[in-house]
Length: 602
Image (tube, rainbow, N blue to C red):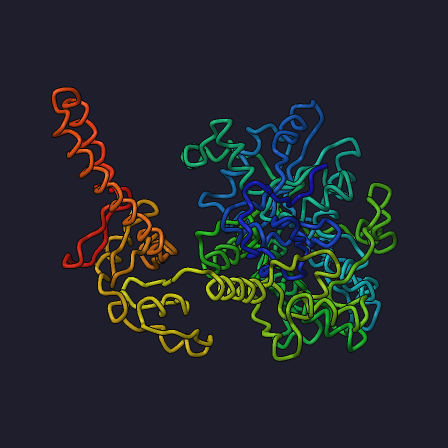
């Protein structure tokens, strides 16, 4: 089965933005492509959000779900409470639309959240009012604990997640043969479906739901008008509507829906959202040896309302307001609201994950990117390979995506990173190669910016145009950089036309009794232009010798023509034409003619 998050390698642009953004560095760069490593991924979806080339993809499950719904079985939709903040239409319209898609019934995932609340409160009552658990509502947090903080696994909630509890409750009510499909803003819920088949069977994102509605030509706006005209077309939620637990998708919503929510100081529970804060909390717990309060940890800042596949065009404040109003309406409106199930909750507390573990896949081997398994000697050697000879070379610039050069070295040893990811190393190598090339190339080289100032040059250039007869040291060459090129090259105007030249241009330049072959080339389009000046004076002198001999031949030929004009007149004329052409081809400007460029080949 395809991983819930994967990389389309042909679209990966080698930018390392996903490495920088991944909170656990679960990205392996191989042959220039950034690949999500399944055993390390926590499914937060941040890499999907920030990938500039959209190379990070979410596995699509819509085709399988459509077949599942059409299978003839009773299929129930577990609808995430964040839907109130996601869609501009009423929940009633959404329920109608889901029914038209083929679901046998629509139930709110918040029903499962209510059951979890009951379990927390029941446990706390039997333990002096305390429940020092880490909430399992967020599957990304659960994955983070299992993979990166295995010593804290025992502190995870003893009951499954709200979605898993909801799936189990629906099966208890309507039979084990039913199917359950979750719809929400979370990629990590797909992992729950993969690892605990049936709890739920599948998980779709809101994007997939919108695509499904579009494919079936179901218009929520039209349904909204129908509902306003005839409210009776709205099917009832099963088993009924959820109450305060619909606030779960907002940071602190879980705690607010508990009895503890009335405590303004929250002495029994703490809510934290955002992966940087979650990791900081877990790291602190690991160092301090545990926790005494209930922890509501959510990977997405602000809660599930800001999930990776939620409406990014709506502000967090607006989403939070919509969710709060939705929950308020559930509390104040008339009609049946779910009040829990004590017997089922007791079963949850007694059996916990064993209710679903017969279907649960084996948990991956815990790994940790925060604890190095390599010796200091190995790390030092890797740092040297990265060009970090001493501490002063460790800039910790973050260009590679890692927080420090040391982390980068460990990732390299782990096979997660490549040396080419070190921007500083590659820049220094490129500069070093450029310096060696400029120093050793047997021609004059100059690079000019769009202000016609020298950006770089070599000693041979200064020998040709600066009247130097000795090489300069690199530190001395630096003194030339930034000076106008016209101080050295009399024909500097020619550089202006090269910034927009379509290709490499070549000329011959006559300058101070020298003949130079000049090659202009673009270094950075419309900003930097380079020029190579090759002294071809010696070959040109040889050409003058050829011209002199040709002139002698012509003179002797003309004398001969005068003697035997009647016999060779026509041939002599042709000979003169050919020899004159030869002279023109090799002729140099006379000593009185002004120096300047000539197009190569003219």
